[in-house]
Image (spheres, rainbow, N blue to C red):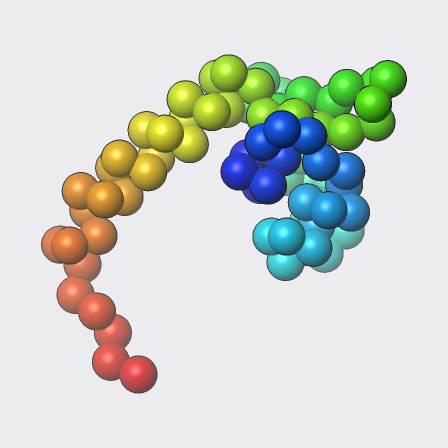
Amino acid sequence: MLEAANGGATKTKIMYKVYLSYAQLKEYLSVLKENNLIEYIEGERVFKTTAKGLKFVSIYSQVDSLVSPLIPEIPK
């Protein structure tokens, strides 16, 4: 969701980009706003990822790249 909102996005754009229902979207946006990872810009009527949110995404990506090779791939 943070990546989807980077640069500004409406609820609808975020919802479709991350494949969530509207109920899920509202719940997750609430948690992200409470933790200052995303903000709502009234004048533009969009959500934007905050600096703290961008830092979180960066750190998460680094951790993922370190952990992913350690997890065995599940056969299809």
